[in-house]
Length: 109
Length: 117
Image 1: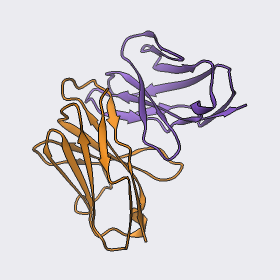
Image 2: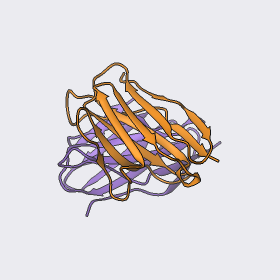
Image 3: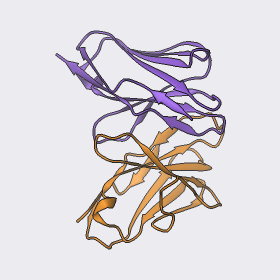
């Protein structure tokens, strides 16, 4: 079966760095997406990785290792507004998105 | 950037009412749109995939006759919750993917919060 695993909840301090991991087992791979979802709102697109390596976009970076079925989202210089759920999703061989359950990130002052 | 508009943002209505939700891609054409449902503190659940000009593909356990989907153009898909009941109360979110490539991110509308009394 297809499976996406990410931690349920993480806590970090304002100004610090946090890494949210995602491991996956899917039938085929056409890329991995990270989304941010604030409570009561729809998800917003953060990043897309299809090749191995690190993609940097401002304070957010996303890493992919296809051989390990592994990705992480790195958030630097954390701000209170970064408190949200972070969703990992993998596009399988049929170009369907398989969603993880999301990681709730709590930022403390 | 890609923008998806979803309307209405909130609906409160009596049990037995049918509710129509619209999802529009504003600056791109979307052959495929997706309808999700999310209950409080739970993950996104895909309900159906809406294909322009053809029948929607429903996920297992989702009633086709209750959740009617129409994707009449490349920029508009609608979801109608027929004869809604309190257990249908949820956050409904649509997303659309730019038709220029399959490996494109899905862009989400702002969601519709449906409350059935």
